[in-house]
Length: 435
Image (cartoon, rainbow, N blue to C red):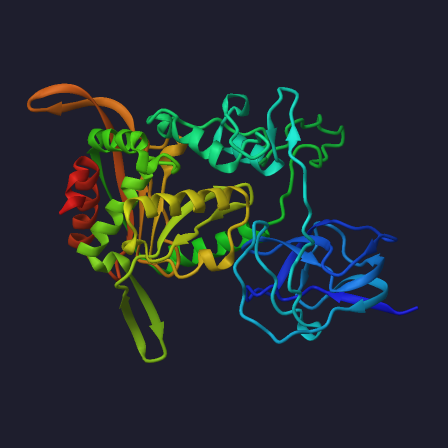
């Protein structure tokens, strides 16, 4: 009886380890080539590993929650036969489920990481027809499916139906502090037990291993904070005209199927201002022959996103070349992909400047830490009605704060101040983007 051992593969991210999150099989299960065996978490993404063998599951060699190195044996398959090894290829674009795995060492590449499964729409007790991914999308966007008219062939609610409904929400919806989800990151047990008589701390505290996204994020933030001299500046802004523009865009047929929020105007403002002050879009590089500053003539716009797995910063490549609608679509895709935990490593690499939208958490301003490899990060605070002096009179206006941290090795005070002032001027008068 032949036994094949499946080693943890290099999933094409240049990483050296991964955590076993959940096994999708158990000993004795029959598997075919490309059946999903296990879900792993690397430092950058969740990935499902397909089987390169057909046969019967023998032994699970690694328990869930354990981090192992690439190349370590994780499972055995008896009476297995390996899939033929094609020529190595570059990483392919991700399908709807996530990254496509490339390069299974000596066993070659698995062309597809899962079998296609046709699922019937799921009908709720309220009579709504929608597939599970659509239901999840609706929950993420706060959309009540019973209020959405389905346009699918069988009357089912489609992704476009949900997005269209969400886009009709109030223009001010995005500036409210969002409700916490049912599942929150816990640092203290929800139901702590009383302390033991002997004073044992086991029931009074919890230890959370630092790994995955949290491990990489913490290392990157420490490296950035203690290598790049940070300077932060900020400015209060009357964003009433930005809010008016967002309202008009939402009502425009050209944006009917795209989610629009003040973040879109902020993104355009940052791109515009970066082109006027290119040093904020530069990077400090230490080389063998000394340090240098690399000025990028393009903008890969990073958007800091809080996800169930931790902070990720995917970026929109060549954002400076996009129209308003194209940028809105790219922001929408980036946000949804991050929420679903499907952001690929490639989407997080080669950013040039980052926006962090702390306003969605009700925060006014902050001192964000620069993303490594960049020279600037801009924070958009909450947009709330406040008293504001207009033509000598105090009036209620929609006010926000724009703040930014910069690498003082790359850019001086006048440049960073001019950049933040430019961003603020666009939020105050978006018509300047027409120049």
